[in-house]
Image 1 (cartoon, rainbow, N blue to C red):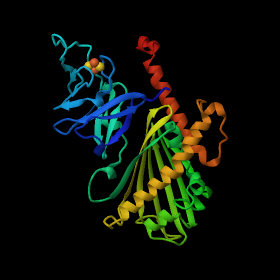
Image 2 (tube, rainbow, N blue to C red):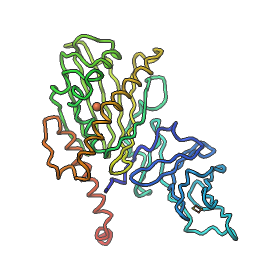
Image 3 (tube, rainbow, N blue to C red):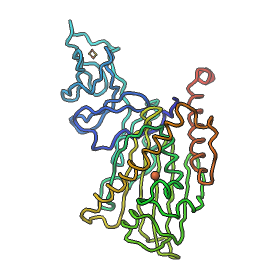
Image 4 (cartoon, rainbow, N blue to C red):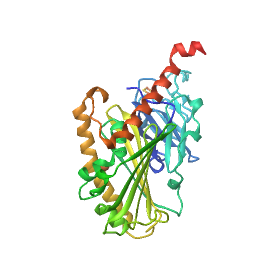
Length: 349
Ligand code: FES
Ligand SMILES: [Fe+2]
């Protein structure tokens, strides 16, 4: 599988990575993460260059990771600094790749491509995810056995909500709403306006509504699979300004061509301190994702098998415009990256 490499992928929520070895495959590569004694997180190849043992099964000695098989130790830069075998030489080839890692918006972001191009400014802005008093936030992680583009499709095509999420998020308005899609650079916007309709039970509970309302879901997609949703409700016929709104992110990171690390968070600036509300919301959202979206998307992947998405000639409906644009945009970016990396391109420079 060809992935976009010169971009930031979410590798973990900040709290997942501690001073103990933590392993995760990203873009088919085994990654080891841990926090140094100064608290900074690092990401290294998780495969020992000697006999390929998983380093995350080893122990940390200060900022050094010791391979559990024959005892080589590597520092946080990935250099072998200790060899307990024989005369103790530390060959230069015994080194681990170190990946640029950025801690921002409550998460750790990894750069899987050319490290000299790892520019923090290339990560889109999600300032509401920074710790602070302004928003209450629920967040989670869901491993899914499907390629990440299917998960991006799922967020960009919210016409599924009324069917797959009946009884939780679904209502009759989402599928009926005509999405407005537009693209600016590599960013795609997809807005749904749902006037004078009753929303789903979980959202009505949060927004303290039961009557028909005007509601909106505005989605922003950035490559490779970063999505931000604004969801809000107001009285029928009233202005959106000042109405209650939630900010929700869905970050998809490919683990492999058949699996995805799905990071999500929901932020609200209202009812922030209500005891128990956060737990209820998290349970509701997790149930909708893990009992409704996940089984469907995994079944979809199983049905597609190894076939290329476009080779199956998918029928396109009105609500698919944004997902199709996202797929095409990503394909173009990958193609451009491949061309730039090809030997012919290098010779021409
Ligand atoms: S496999 Fe790691 S030291 Fe031998
Ligand atoms: Fe869904």
